[in-house]
Amino acid sequence: MSKSYNFMDGMKAAIPVSLGYISIGAAFGIVAIAQGFSLWQVACLSIFLYAGSGQFIMIAMMAVHAPISIITLTIFFVNFRMFLQSLTATQIFPHQSLKSGIGMGTLMTDESFGLMVLEHATNTPITSFWMQGVNVMSYLTWILSTILGAAVGNLIPNPEQFGIDYALVAMFIGLLVLTLDSMVKNERLTVVLTVLFSTMLIYYLVGIVTSSYVAVLIATLIGALIGAVMSTPKETRKTEVI
Amino acid sequence: MYFYLALFFSVIVTWVPRISPFPLAKLIQFPAFFKRFLNYLSLSMMTSLMVSELLILHKNALPSFDGLRCVAMIPAMAVGYLRKSLMLAVVTGVMTMALLRLLVV
Image (cartoon, rainbow over all chains, first blue to last red):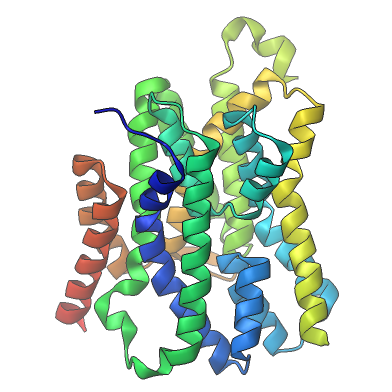
């Protein structure tokens, strides 16, 4: 029974991601309406910006009429991790066409990125069609749930009561556990654990002085750098790193 | 007008970094060290994203832990690991959180 990786398989693989997006997307719609944005504006943000945390930050900043230059700079910084995610995709799919790559990059998210790296670590090679399926399913779910949240969100009195807001947190927990599980099989345990704990510590310390999205970016970069340096073969270390 | 201008510029600064690696990769070969960096990137990114959901940041003070979220993490983690399933991790996490809110609040 070998696993296949066509477009439909990708859409199915994105179901846990979609569960998370339904809750956080609906929450976005509710918050945006409460801040005075229209249904149309919610749809525009989801369709064109398509960035969870970025959208929340945008409505918060626009609600207080922050200067457009400041909004733009903030969004650039918050979303810059997507550059690194797309870079990873170019290494996983080296032979895909530019058109397919641009489509993939446009719709890549933290969660679909996590799924991609995870599936890539298994032995069967994943296809770009599979990844497009994951992305399209996530994208459609996000648009629909943000619009739905904006339209009927006020009818549900207390959604937190059902724990739905925890879906996205649980997804990161699951992604991390599964990433760890596959990495300890392929990489040295000391390196994996060092990256894990140093990233946590860096986030904790950087979080004292910056906002959470800046801390995420800095901890991610330094953590991956530590992993890269530690996994450099000894004989090439001196010449290559410096 | 304000809304559309803010949206336009934000879309540009989000989309260009998102897609630029694809034409870039066609033009240059990345060095081996950079590939090792990308190899550890998903681990460090998932770690910091998860921690960011569990910690509450304060200005100029040590971050504190979100107690309920940390407790609900344990069954989600255990089920995700034992059953090797993202879906079950999500469902377990949500059900635990609902239960915790029922009991605690």
